[in-house]
Image (cartoon, rainbow, N blue to C red):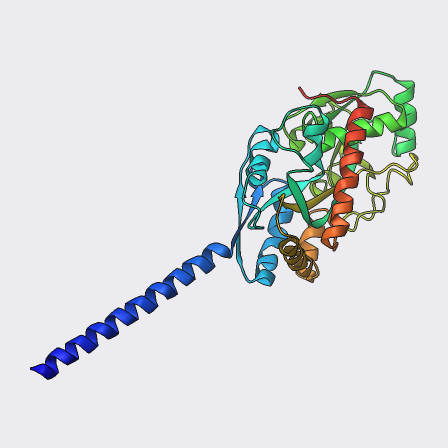
Length: 329
């Protein structure tokens, strides 16, 4: 009987020890899981131009980090809802903003977005740059940028252009082009790039600038023609399209970067770790081809190099908004 009691005590002791070890193990797993789940916040609707570059790199980046990452859409208020969400998140590098050059436009327009585009964020990594293509209705009697400018000067106030909305990159790019070319075109804002381009196809408007990635379907349409691209150099995706600079408007370029921003206060070591993983992802040929197919020229910059691009772009975007006289509506 004494032997049975001793055996029971030993069994209970073993059971309690195993339960204690299991509890510690499960707690460790839960803590590890919570620490290795990252979120990339896209501040616009799912499936849009801002989400595509994030999807092109995030899985390979997560693999390099040895972590699990997801993409979430926090749309609304022209991107402000998602941007504020990241600005107020914990500075632990687990919540990144999928940002672009338009990050600075809202503030430059004089609006109050409830976040500071510089102070509330730290640049993490640049995915790449996107350029735009200037399209015109095929019935117009010109085929080059130089002839387009000459025609517009001979017909002041008679031509118009479309954009994806007030303050959009397509609006800013075309307004800047008109300013630099010294021509007067009426701006007609739409709710999206496709609607804006379709009215040029139909002949209701004369011109539109759209991202390189979306231009393919229009190049095959005889109702429209591509005059030039806004990048410094011809794009890998559309090498047959000349730049605006080489087509008659010297020193003109307009490009947008796509990159990740973290909450201000994120430790430098964390930023560097994510940046290294991002660059490892971009160095993979499959990832590079995904980006190029989206009209994005891949970048491989360290965090300090991206910070220089980030700060320089703030100055540029603010200047462009002021030069073309854009205001929030």
